[in-house]
Length: 304
Image (cartoon, rainbow, N blue to C red; front, side):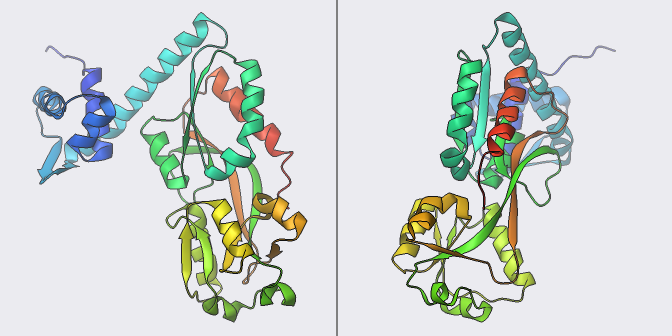
């Protein structure tokens, strides 16, 4: 009986299409034509002898056989990437590539120091940053688009190793002229009468906040969603609403008195930050160094 190995280019097209669910997006991600992707998938299906995708309009969905192939394909592609990285690093010290995903918060307050220290150790390492929230980071890790991710700890996320860095606490930030600031507390029943300014809906922070308030039996009124921490602070300053942020993100404003941080009603709402990577994946020297620098720098962050 003659056996043949699977083509790595076909596996890459398969894994990308499984993630995107679109021939158009897959072609864009791989810098190929849609026709080339279509022919590659057809050739793979002919090779394995079973259909891997169901076509429904412009969308595609994995068949049972496709679901069976996907984890193996992703593992093979990760191992190929790791092998190439290891060989590149073996050739010359400090060379190679590091792809890091990070939330906007860590990009602004944690990464600058980490990157400065990392550059001193690996001046020739090609470094690429991908910003995004927790769900986006998980997607990038799973699709092998980033090697490490600085993010909030997901509630339930199998397949990831999460190295804890520090824990912070979300609080309600308001103008010093706000009635809550004068009272020194946020009455739980008053949440329904104020506009709460939150970071992106669908982020891990948003999910934590929703679960916290639900568990405390507290109702919300108007909610304003913004994708910028700076914008949340500015609107809270002028009394447009009450922002929900960790104090360390607004340290300057709290020190100068333009904002006041109050405890979240219903008890403390804490989050855990860390460095995540795919479980079972052996980190390269550059990746291990970067994660270690994150741990060292995190110890200097005042999150109170």
